[in-house]
Length: 71
Image (cartoon, one colour):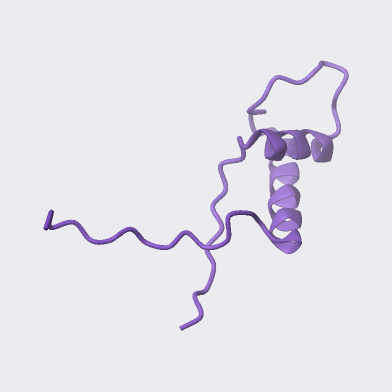
């Protein structure tokens, strides 16, 4: 025995459509309020929703989803 606790289950490997919408909306709001953009985007791209979608696709959005566990 190594004395370490067993790894916690990670939940679903992907986000639900509701989680995705909430994450994209929150990130688009952050970008529109001046938060740094976490990916390289062309200078002509100014739509915060499109920027958030590209960050999400790249896996660069620093937002964590906490799910209630069914017991």
